[in-house]
Image (cartoon, rainbow over all chains, first blue to last red):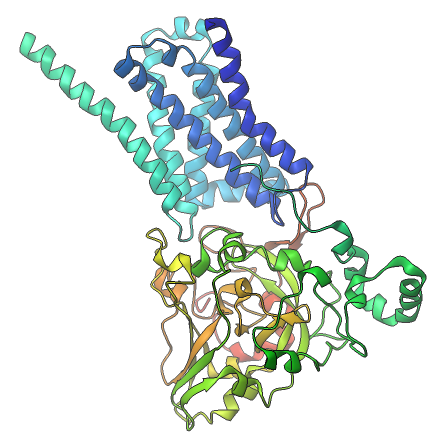
Length: 198
Length: 347
């Protein structure tokens, strides 16, 4: 039973990707498929990032180890969707016009912000194997706290590109605030307990 | 949520791409094609046209809309076809009817591109009246039927460039705004025209959304000389058919050399005034959306580029990224309106 969980999580995490491939194949992304693909892959990046961040609180609340066992894989899927997002932006929205891409990365704040989040995810992905965890020791945890920053930058990136509909950004932002708020409260709470015990 | 229902239009009902392409050659070479049609190759765009009808484009037969009221039928029975030359015609491929009517920015019906076509079912374009106010000799509330009575409808094929960097080519049905304005006899004080879109909480689900930061009603405006320019058009139809709700029924503005948001939809009020009116997007984000909003590849929107555009429809692997032209390619006819103006400052 336990052995089935990992492949199932892997399979489910790939579903949105295959759904998008199917829509590309069926020419079902609407008249502006480049835009639609960017929106979808961007949103799936954020969803996986938030899902990853939800694992630790879920484990602490339920005391079920299953929630953190696949945290790394979920995080890597966030990186995967971010990569597809970045590639499709370069390929389909900017047509690999390198000068325009460089200009956009520097001149458009929302793209700079999103790209920074992407760079963080790459750094976290590269340092995610067990060997790297051992090698980095204490610094590993410090480095991987950057995931909070990546999530915040991701929501800012979304909020910044919107024209008027702030609904989805507000939803993702609220979930992120909840997940970060939980950690802050827990930190303050356990911090106090440690103090009073001393 | 992710997997959409496949299109319910049969491929046979979609006007073949070959018909849209090289329209100019098509018109020159009409006899050959007509022969082809008689030989059974099938040209739905022509097949659905009425006898003696020479419109350049028609909505697919199965997608044609019923008349909002009986008097519309008569009005649409005699439309002057688009000429074969710029500016009221372009040789570029037309954006297919189903894309023009299913990919819309009309926030009163929702924020996503598909929302206006999905959510405008309860919208009633008839009866309709337009309030004329301000600096005119003949203010009042006019029934649309009376507004259109003396008007001769014509077909014009224009490029439409959205500020979001996509564009379409659309065969509109309408008439010059100048003709309408003259009938109300503007006074010497009328230097600007202000337009307003309907706000109806019952038929427009978008206006009750908490997440739309628009201050309804949607408002737009033109300088008087822009409004009187022969290219500026009041539109009541597209593809030879009545204007769908999602495209701004029953009557909207089209200003082809400006970004799409200037071309206000479902107009209920036209106000003539001495001072420049407030406009919705300019109010929301003045550094991003100017009052003039002329299409200009040299002035980027702060958040995205304007030098290229995605001509719709696209597929991922046969993209049409084309260069955006100053005044959307209509400079010859409108550039003089802005002589001496710094277009980077008055964007």
